Length: 126
Image (cartoon, rainbow, N blue to C red):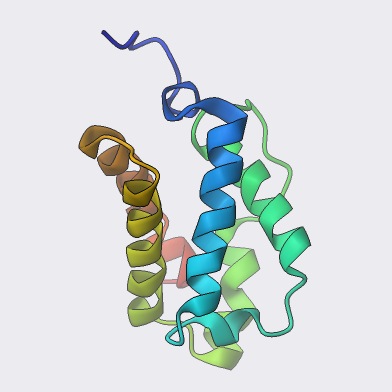
């Protein structure tokens, strides 16, 4: 039985699980022609590192996050490159496929996807 006092980060498998998920996620993103153009000028090693830090925080593995806000990080993409709900959905689909491929339970996938969905308005600067 899972200890409900454990953070989502711990229930997912901690640092190794987040690292594996981020790596697989970005493999899927870079293979997805609907969204990979947003990353054409991105240092992907740095991007993966930033994503690991953010997800560790978002999943309760760290009490603090010093990175830029979702709204700020995506503002230029919305204004200059047309980032929209279709792109957000594509990212979410890749995230869900990543989690399922890693063998997470439906409950854990649901928790992660709920967190992802909660970022919609900030990512799209709505």
